[in-house]
Every structure is written in C-alpha cells, then in structure tokens.
Image (cartoon, rainbow, N blue to C red):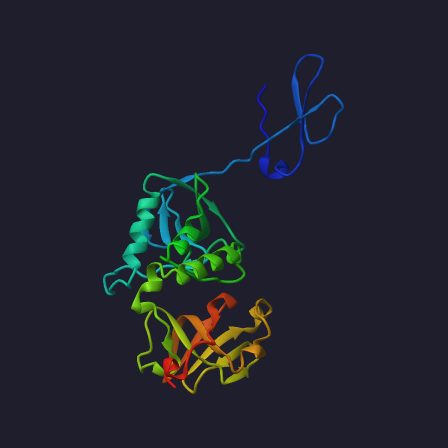
Length: 275
C-alpha cells in the first residue's frame, strides 16, 4: 500500500496508524483506540550554491538569487566601482563556507525585495546560521528591514560582541564613526557610522527627524515608530547612527529603519565630535 501524506497540513497534528482485519495499514489524524502515534519529521529541502556574488548575495543551482536577510557586507569590486574595505574578505569567507555544503532557506514576512531577489536566512546541514556567522566574524553589519525581524536579537548580540572584540570591519579605519560636524560636501559613500548630539526633534506626518545639525538629520518612518523607545528621549543625547547617507543639495539625511541602527555614545567628548 502506497500512502502520500500532505505534510504542510499535518505537520503540527498527531498522526495515527492502525491495521484492519485484513492487515491493511491505515493513517488518520483522528484517534482510534487500536492506533499508535506516528512520528513524522517534515525535514527540509537543501540546495547547493552555484555562485557567491558577494558576502550577502548568492545564486542557487536552480537560478534563484538569494539576498541574506538581516545583514549587509561591504561591496566587492564592480566594473565601475572599487571594492569597499572588507568586501572581498566577506565574499571569500562565504565561498569557503559554502563550496562543499548544502543550505536550506528560512524566510521572513517578505519573500522578495524590490530587485526580485529571494530574501532568506541560510542554514547549513550542520545547522549553522550563515547570516549570523558572518556577523559574529565581523564580516557583516546588521541591516534590519521591518517587517522582517526574524533573529534580530541574535544578530544584534553578535554584532555588539564582534564590535567589542574589534573583529573584521570593526578594526578597520574606513568604518570608524565620523563626527557629524566632520561631514564634507561629498558626504560618505556606502554604509557609514555618524556620531553627534541630537539638538532637536522634528515631526512630519510621515516621519520623525532626529536633528543633529543644520546639515544632518536621521529619519524614522512613523509606521515603524512602535519598534523604537520614546523618540523624545533621544533629545540632547549623543548618538551614533548607522546606514546610508542621502544628500539633497547641501543637506544630508539617513534613514533609520530599526533601533538596532542607533547606539548611545555618552562617553564621546566634544573634541571627538568635532565640536
């Protein structure tokens, strides 16, 4: 007797097995006094990686382009752009990690991004969380895009530890925090860290702005405000904010999607802030 069980519907239910008088086996999700419980392990589908594009993007053998969720690694060299410091290190680490391995995908609320890439956390057959391991090694910084908040606490803890231990990018001068008042006219390309004192809080219908100077603000979208503590508590505090700079004329802004991109830095002196 061949039996096909639809795992997605039954995976969280008890499955019972019994034999009738003719010796035929039967399965059901309804209890029977003569039945025994069957343990069913749903298992996972594992894939091989065809290409490691960079430290946070891979292509599977089935052609899907996977963007690792919750993290960002420095850029590798492109035709018209030099590599960011640490970009090749992250790519090499990922190649070595995945070249003889198979991985499974774990998804969050959003399955794809605006570029059509599949968004996922990668796990090896040995249950290693690849996204998390990159952060632990200091090869990636966290980059949280709500509503995708899976493993955010683990990623934050790993980043804090790697930064404290000065691993990977956290020992590189290219990723040292820049005082807000030291921003030049060209700003800063790529992912960056800026530190300064919040001198005002500005509100609009869609956003809350932490004003650091006449030239720089950090923006929090109101739809994600519930993720943050009381933003008014930031006023007068010395904060470090992390992300990508946007420039409009001579004014800079940085979008803060999650409170993990904010660090309080009370120990900074005025000299260190460029004041």
